[in-house]
Length: 399
Image (cartoon, rainbow, N blue to C red):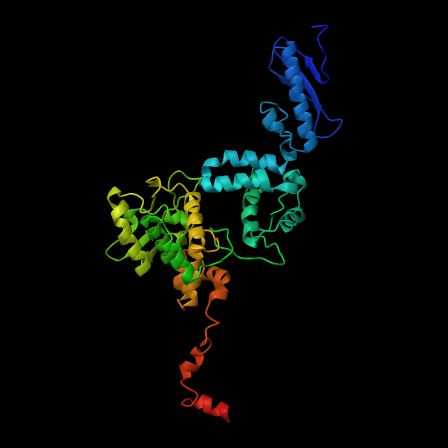
């Protein structure tokens, strides 16, 4: 093949293969790999382009030996030196069917877009300090930080179990608490900060809905506090007409083509339907009841809602017509909770209705809406003893 162009690091080794040579993982550590290609001039050029891409990925710290050369005996040799990002991609692909579609998409986004500095580090070199610093540099809540750490923690545990690394920065830190100066607790599903609607705004929103079916769905959302993912997955089979109640045991997100079970036991719950929500259900019967499937369908397409984005588009239009400052449809849920607590509803009732695991979580999210700003706030204790004129305690204090 004399006379043909010579490419550095590329050579013909047989009539059916080409060998490429590169330094990895450090300069001076030469690796040779064969590519099964007939060494024609065109294929030698292709091999050289492939080699250039490998060298560039090594320079950027994104090279994955096992993925590039899965049949190479050196693939396993470099497992311990793999970057966190590349390792987690393989780990997630291997466990794709262990997670709900929405969870898989969330983990994939974290891996692809949010690992930043630690994603380019080799797993053996990562310390708890590196992980803590990565979190502190992001403007996220404590809960969001824990959610992002969850797949990272699982990937490290898997690597330890497989004997691929020997250092686990999460050791003895099963529930990491990373201190931040200012954290805002948010709902388990909604990412929006609590920003409820007033009574007048609710009336304006409902009054500016174009379709009666929009009116019904919005009224049900405000009247129950269910999540949007639960609202659009609701079927007529879940409605108990005798006891005026609804069983919440399904959810649908844009990432799942069909409804799935909730993540936590507390999310599976029965909600008693009060007047606003009950009237919405009775009004909705004439539209979708005979089909026997989803209670709330998209009136523009006569098809089930595919995710919260399908709800958000008409919602935005309705708020513009109503002249109401924009907040997402998830604020219907926050409005139900905050208003119920403001009006004196029992904390445990509100928490159970919301599907929260603990009432303490409900308290943390909505504590400022508990009625300590009412004119009679703090009077319950005095009422227990009677009026100041009637009680001995009052007479004694008056002396």
